[in-house]
Image (tube, rainbow, N blue to C red; front, side, top):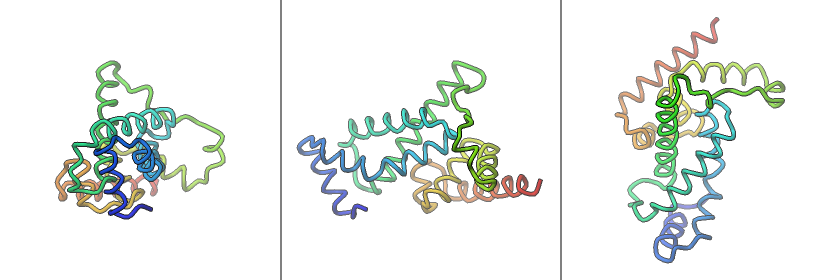
Length: 176
């Protein structure tokens, strides 16, 4: 795990000398968490999650000079990923009535999944996109509400309300 100082050194090298190796180190550090976040947002569509992760890192590399360091690099990166996902969803909704690329394909790993995992996946699919994003950032990525607010541009009170509503929705599904 990179320290804040090491992270800023790598970013400075990217900005000052266009050091691709330094950016590669940042990608190595954050790719797994970012891909997991996108994989959960896309409800298990790994091809789409990989495409969105790649687009996120490309945009981050191209706009690294705009990173001001006011938040952590991870927060800034997740904000780009969040925007990429919602841009994709907007395009999909404009081109078709139902987003067909966001599906939960059945694979052998899902067949072997535990009942608890399948219940959680079912609960996540019952949430709207914004609720799912907030739940994933809070419970899976373990981000504080202040960081989630920076990523989603939602007020902290709204995030707390969404978490409460999402918990209630998921609890209701578990009780069925």
